[in-house]
Image (cartoon, rainbow, N blue to C red; front, top):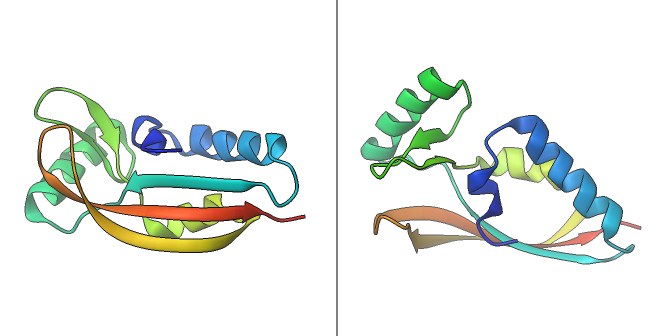
Amino acid sequence: MVGVLSYILEDERRKALFREIERVLQPKGLLCGSCFLVSPEPYRQRKYRQGRTRFGTDGTFESDSGGIYRHSREADLRKLLDHFDILSWEQERFTTQNQRKALGLVFEARKKE
């Protein structure tokens, strides 16, 4: 699951995605993923404030090219993975579609029995 959460803005739809992943994975099945994290950089914080006002969701913003995306908080991701054992959890620096640097997360998690 690479970058999928950037395109799912609503909390309930994110929860539904993880319920479905949990449903289809066999016990001890492996989930690998990456996503962008909420960034402390001033440019991004300004975009998040604008997005929170417009969309009502934390971490959501409109890019300079007009796309609407959502970055995640680590605590929220851990809640989504509540039914998984986290095997690895590494912050990384990524380059976005608009060639901006962004903080991201790469993880592996195993479905609990």
